Image (cartoon, rainbow, N blue to C red):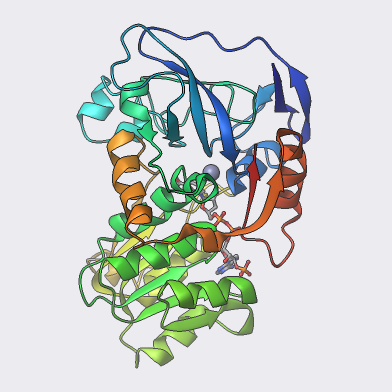
Length: 351
Ligand code: NDP
Ligand code: ZN
């Protein structure tokens, strides 16, 4: 079979591979629609997970089941399915402890285009199919549903980590596709004032559509000053970090009220440590909680999230700014993600 792969750090290309093998609990799926991710760019061009050779990329897909193992109960060939980016080993001690995303080791629930070939192949392997896939309901657009693999659960996980409650004031730092889903998730969770930090006009407009009440442009002034001015020096109840860099943490601490919570889903790619401003952190006694996490995967989450699309409570089609048709266009879509033109939010490839 054919696949679009990381050949080595900073090098990609089409390769031929054997179709993946599968065990009794697993499935083989062919993609219907896929979307490249900022993480694919970190993986290839920043060497974020170290060297990989001839590894097929991609972890955001909906597909059609081609084969199932002898012990798979709920899926059969021909079923249309959503596959989360994170596909844990559900029997692991970490999963039993409530942290499925770390099954087998820290961050090891992320298998596609990390420990095994990803979804940019003509076929791909899904471990523990009954626990890691969900049926794509009739009437849900496959392209929109690709956003359920990673963008929605990651953005929403930021909201969960920050523990947004009814009426909370919330600041979402970063409004790429992940942060936009944090905005949408915080609005669904009952945020009152919802500050969105970004600069690209396209993202700003869509952030407003998803429920942002105030836009903070980080290129036009210090985030901390802008938020403190808008909140009359009080700060916000919750901060979700979905963009920026190591310094963003310090800004988040600065704008957080005592008792507040930071939920980080941003990938921190540089440096050895993160600085926490001592005084603003209450000299260690400010009850300002920092939480950071990889999105949880699994079937139940996919089923619940797709029900938001079915009922119209969430519209992910707004994220899909660039559409491609045909398997061969995966390369163009990934390169577009690498170049990040200003009007790009997410590219999607309909196979
Ligand atoms: P994007 O690059 O599309 O968006 C980043 C956002 O951050 C943009 O809105 C950008 O603003 C903003 N930004 C950049 N620099 C700053 C700054 N200095 N201060 C404030 N805002 C800034 O990324 P994605 O939405 O695709 O992904 C966000 C992060 O989530 C990435 O790091 C990605 O690796 C990570 N991720 C994490 C996952 C998880 O499970 N935890 C899974 C998937 C992704 P502008 O408008 O100027 O572009
Ligand atoms: Zn992704």
